[in-house]
Image (tube, rainbow, N blue to C red):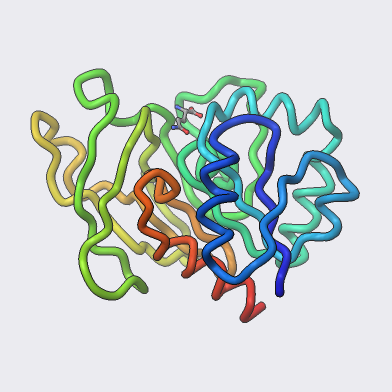
Length: 202
Ligand code: GLN
C-alpha cells in the first residue's frame, strides 16, 4: 500500500487522516524531514496558510518539500493547502512562502465577510455521480491559472454574492490537486479517493 502523509504542522490534520484511511493507503502525519522522505503522496490540510508557512520554515520542511514536489510528489491541498501549493497568493502576508506546485494565482479569504463560510453543490471533473457538497471556510478562490492547469470545478452561484459565481475552486496540475473547499469535513471520500488513485498511478 502506498504511504500518504498529511502535513501535520497545523490545521485539520486528523480529518484528512481519517478520510485517507478509507482509501486503501497508509495514512501518516508528517512533521519531520525523515517522515516526508517516506511518503508517496502528501495532503496539505486546511488551516491558516500564514501560520503553516511559518511552521514549514521553523521545521525546516520548506525546501525539502519544494524539492519533492519538483521531483513529482503527488499532493493534494485543501483551502490553506491550496494557498500553499499556489505559485502566487493575493492578500497574503508579504513574508508568506509558496510551494509553487500549481501555476495559479489564488486570493486568500476571497469570498468576503458576507459569505465567510458557505456550502455549495459542485460538479467536479473526475468525480462521478452526485455533485460534491463543498464546505468553504474563509476560503480562497483561484483568480487565474496557467496553461498546464486543468480547472475541475467552479462555483455555481452563492446567495448574496454574485461575485463568487464562476470562480475556480478546484484544479489539477499533473499529480497535484487543490480545492478551495474541505472534502475532509463531509464524509464523502470521493476527492480523497481521486487523490489516492493519483498516488497509486504515480
Ligand atoms: N483563510 C485561511 C488562510 O488564509 C484558510 C482557511 C481554511 O483553510 N479553512 O490560510
